[in-house]
Length: 116
Image (cartoon, rainbow, N blue to C red; front, top):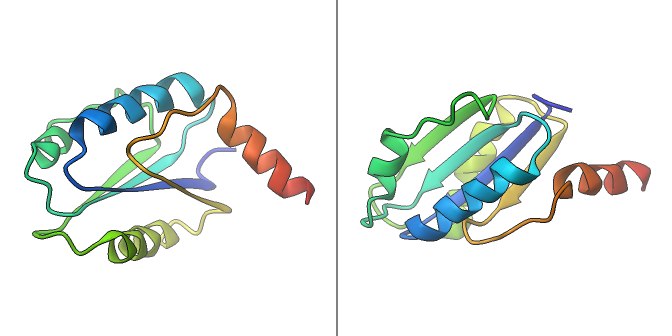
């Protein structure tokens, strides 16, 4: 399980929560994944955060899409999906920048989906 997983996130003015979600990804993911982030024109420092962000190789790749204004969650998710589709992954995962996940959440989810 690696490059066949793309995690997509759309954010808008949620920098503090976004940082917490990233911390959770660091502690709960057991495999490298690709990350696609669409920023909906945040004015809270989110764009600058991403421009200076270093994951020290945690993610297989990070794709950033910065919109000039908030186009809404649907357009953001569609843009993320379009970018993610370029990798032709087996698994597409969407996550919001305000969630905390339990240990092994991704692998368990994929196992359940694969079994059914």
